[in-house]
Image (cartoon, rainbow, N blue to C red):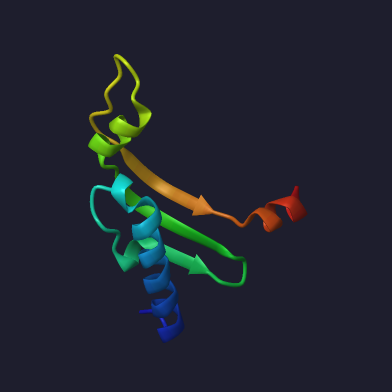
Length: 86
């Protein structure tokens, strides 16, 4: 079980993900698939299927067709944090 703050952060992240990359996902992610670390500024999206029709349309590669796609872990780290560590 997670706190009310975690729940709100996950709901906000889920809304942002739906607007930005939602068309590339086969289905809407569950809150259990999201993890937000406010202290580090990172978020994780786990175990999602890709919408291959949209991916193929965006890639438009002659002779290539993606028939199935799966992302085990998508980790987003703010650019400032990467620069500080780099």
